Image (cartoon, rainbow, N blue to C red; front, top):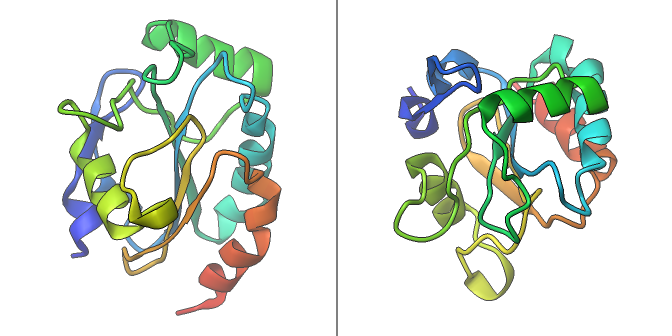
Amino acid sequence: MAEIDQFSATAITGEPVSLGAYAGQVRLIVNTASKCGFTPQYTGLEALHEEFGPRGLAVLGFPCNQFGGQEPGDAAEIANFCALTYDVAFPMFAKVEVNGPGTHPLFAYLKHAAKGLLGSEAIKWNFTKFLVDRSGAVVARFAPTTKPEALRADIERLLQAR
């Protein structure tokens, strides 16, 4: 079992979820927010989910309120916003912290495995993306400004690798 598969998180509906449930899949893990300039990226994330999900991509959204208070709602409000505004069908999780002493263990692991600019582990803003291969290795980190559609070739390559 890959190290990443040993983490768990709370689904936006409140149930605990083991990341081991996604073992063997390519994973795109994103910290999200509903009131951010990058929020329209939900459309691109959902498009990736629809196109590549049947072939083994799991897009996993983790709302975060640490950047400008851009995710102020509770779980029900976030779930409703995502479903009604962007028709999000990929798994969403409960709000997490991605920086500081309350950092969710999954994000501590991701940040260490794929550092940002100049070797920084800190996440700079909402919609930072981490791409994980089928074996559970973190292979890339993408800035919030990187649009989901720009990840298609990387995802395709990982889906074809066995």
